[in-house]
Image (cartoon, rainbow over all chains, first blue to last red; front, side, top):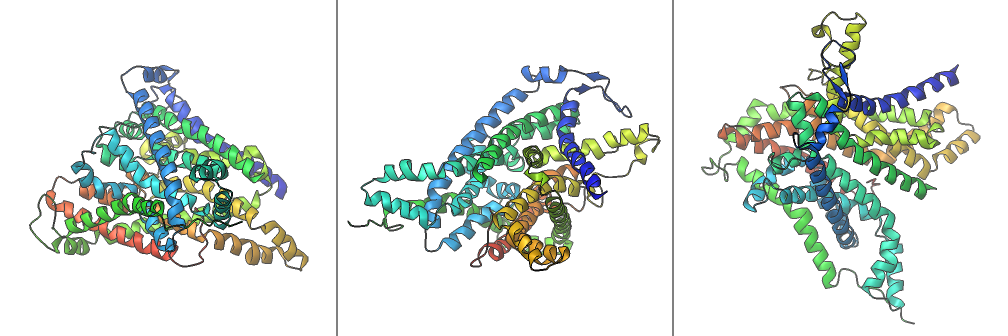
Length: 257
Length: 291
């Protein structure tokens, strides 16, 4: 009896997980869906075709978001990796770790609102460079904290071994540190990419509506009550993370095995 | 042969590293906080006319911050508590099923949906004109959309809590699963059974204490994240009270310039609370951390 009950719960939970994905895709393919109809009057690719037109600018937003997230992920991962080494080998690493957490746990939108004056003064308000910089400021602490566990006695000993055997700085990085940290670098890249890709509040404050990333578009469609385009942009918002998650998860599986 | 130990932090590279950390990690936070603090005391800003505590007095008198903080803490607390309970139950009940790659992928999948899309989906599902309302109408459970209960933008914040649950239950499940493996809880369980413990004793004295102790910092961290959450309450929340981030942005974006410093007062108070929480969570020695 108990086993039977469990056998029903699991497929139900799987359906529950898949439902939002299916529903959003279904909604993006729908049109003329008036209350109280349970099914839409139109079902087809009309909404998706508009992506290719300039009417909504969704494709541009998608490409712009991809560019911003790639830039943020690359810069945060690399700077986080190099700087975390100094921070987590420092005698006062506990204090430095606490300082790294402060911008990380503060709500990004509040952080951006308090920083907006400086962005305005630096000419970084309402442009892509400003949005990349602002998103970097929240993903950099994440990367820094992410690599904290990497820097330990074992790694230090490997580095000393390379130096003892006559290796230089490049040897230490390219023959020891990068190969050892390859997996972590990859996961950190994915995570910081997602932090940037999902970001709405901070982007809306620093971008002031001029930098229309995909999250800004989703919110715009929700406000306009244009639910079909809203669902379509949600699909575009979810698709890259699903792909990244698949790659990332596969890697995690390998690591555990 | 001489063993070469590289003098860490005694060279130029280390000094540059710390300098970069301060410039990129510490300075922006400090600058943002100091600017908000100065603005809240009327020392900077468009209507600045010298030091004043009137904005602080006004915020404290109206109680908007405390109301919003209490509301946010209640929502975040309920969401985190329910998520932990449900995730623990699912992880322990379906532990062997979670070994299956497809099932595990299903746990990962919700992590690909950002808060904004979750909020949009919940509106589509639970609003008066949403999918469930349509099904209720078709099933003759309601006669018009207004009869459908308020499940979004409602007083009890049901929509917000549901959105938070769908976002963090999978995360906690993966976390508990990871700790279960890393801490070799299965071996400890078998050991406890062989020493004569009952199922209840194994669960309450071995499994749950280890899982919760090892993850408590991250659970607290998620409470802080939810406390400052913005997109979900912006879409699914009500006019008043609002969650803290929504309140800050609403105050700062007002057309009434006199009200902007009050927004910075709220921002400063919120930042101080978060900073105190960070000190308690991350400063003590020998604290286990999961990032």
